Length: 375
Image (cartoon, rainbow, N blue to C red):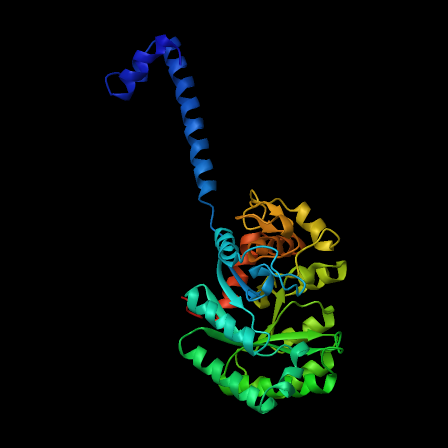
C-alpha cells in the first residue's frame, strides 16, 4: 500500500469516510487495494480449510504387535538388534491416524500377549484369540492334549470378552502352502473345532486361507447360520471367483500389501464392494514393496505430505536403529495409509471414501470399543 493511500484506508476502516466520497483516482486505488486484501484473505481461509481437512481415521484390523521384531529380535536370533520400540511404533501409528489396533493372536501365548496389550492400551488395542493353521500341531503337543488347549482358548477368550479386550476368534483357518508346518488333516481338524468354539462364544472370525479355498469353505458353511457377524478373511490374495464366493456368504475381505502384489490382485481389490472392505497392515510383514503392482498405483496417487503413509519418519537398517526411526523391511501400522491410497487408486475414488467405509465395516464387525451401528 502506498503512503498516500494509508490515511484514506484508515478513515474508511474506522467509518470516518466512505470510498464514494474519494476522488476517482483515490477511489480506484482504494478498490484495487481492497480487492487484493479480499483475495489474500480468501486464500488464507482456503489454506486454513485445507489444514482442517477431515482427519482420516484408521482401524488396523490385522497387526502382529506381539511379534519379536517390535522387541528388537529378528530371524530367531538370541540377541536383540535394538531395544524394544513398540511404544514408538504405536505412537507413529497414532500420529498417522490409526485409532484402533486389532492385535492378532496366532497361538495361546501370543493371544495372551495380545490381551496384555489391550490392557496396556485401553481403547486402542484389542485382541484376537486362536491358533494359526501353521501352528496347528501345538494342539497335539499341548500338555493334556488338544482338547485341553481348546478349552483354554475358550476360557481365555470368554474372560477377555467380559472386559472388552477380546473381539474376534482367530487367526484360524487352513494353509496348504505350508504343509511342512502342519499337515492337512491336523489343520482341518483344529480349524473345525475352533470354529465351533467361536460359534459358542458368538465371536466374529479372523480367518486365514491359502491355497485351500474348497476345504476352507467346506468347514465354514455348516456354521454360517450361527455366525451372524461372519468374519474377516484377512490378507486376501485369492482370485476374483473366490472373493466373490466369500462376499456372497457374508464375509468381509481384509486388504494389506500382500493383497496388492500383482495386477490380478489389483483387479480383485477393485471388485471388493466398499461395504465388505477392511484395511490392515499385517505388520511386521506384508509391506508394499517396489516390485509390487500396487507400488506403481501408489506413486501415481498424490499423497498428502506423506500423512498416514509412513513417509514422515526416517527409515534405518535394524543394525543402525535409532530412537524415533522406522526399521527398513519391518512393516508398521503407520503405513496403513499406503494401503488405503492404493485401494482408492484402483477403485478411482477418494481416499476418504475408502477409509470411512473400512472404519464402519471394522467397527460394525468387531466393535473395537465403539457403537456398532452409530446413528
